[in-house]
Amino acid sequence: MPALRLAAPGRVRPEPVAVGVLAVALVAWVVTLDRMRGMDAGPGTDLGALGWFLGVWTTMMAAMMLPSALPAIVVFTRAARGGTAALAFPAGYLLVWAAYGLAAYGVYRLLAATAPSFLAWDDAGPYVAGAAIVAAGLYELTPLKAVCLRHCRSPLHFLLARWRPGTRGALLMGGEHGLWCAGCCWALMLVLFAVGVMSVAWMAVIALVVFAEKVLPGGRRLTLGIAAALVVLGLWIALAPGSVPGLTEPGGTAPMEMGMGG
Image 1 (cartoon, rainbow, N blue to C red):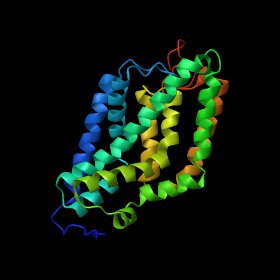
Image 2: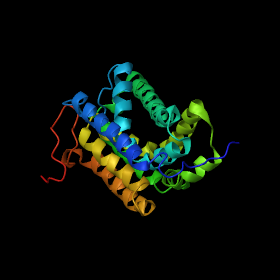
Image 3: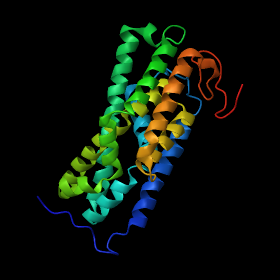
């Protein structure tokens, strides 16, 4: 197996790489804001045609996930000494999240076709959404979450052990790293579907949670608080959805502003 060698100082500097990744994420946020304006219909928002949804979803994932993947991308780019491999690694990472969106789309269409009342807001909808969010909170406390989060927070050991040369190797490594991060964050994305996948406000909240867990010092210690917050949110939505700030009720009231009472 080829050994991983970090680029010599000055060969590939981390600062331009970080700026480039964050610039891509910023552009993805701008595009997302433009394409999703006025589309938040709350839980059970129709996902539209498959091609349209996958385009929007992948753009959303670039906006939400690239900042938290920045440590791995910087280390890989320095090890690969730039080139096309440096672009293939984040591409492989985003392909995993595109596959997640494809799977979620399939589940949504299956439920909509076979059990429409399951998602109906005036039927079981609040309980389904609340239960999904509670489940996401409980997942925060599982050993699998801890293992995946540890990998995402410390990617160097993965790069040392799983190094593959060339552009194809970079694509595979990006995909493998993406699988670990999907294992870490899939339940948080389930929360996004539960509260309204086209809501930019909830998208921003979940992106901040992901970044805090994966990047900030002491992020692993945040999981207990995040778990508790998700359980409370899930119960709140199940029992009194109309009072939840920022939640659009399908076919009903407009959302209250985040952080505002009443």
